[in-house]
Image (tube, rainbow, N blue to C red):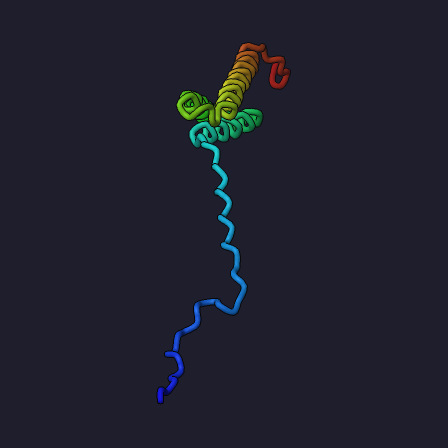
Length: 132
């Protein structure tokens, strides 16, 4: 008499009773960040501030120092833009223009003040107080 044994235990296959899930879709690629030019941006900001300050009569004295800094930073930013594929070129050109305009306004203020002071010093006094 042969005795029948039950078959040995076999663990079920993983997810045997569940429908198979599709694989996760791949993540989209990260967007490329365009190159930036910090020196051109800094030159533009400094030139813009100095240009606005040059419009104020007594505050324009500070602009004599700040305008050349903005022009130099913008020029360096313009040369760096050629190495970075044109990044910041427009800001650098705008900084050069604003810095030059700021210097021009400072010069016009200086010429106006010099003319006013020389006219005040060269004018004759028409004071009648104390004259016989």
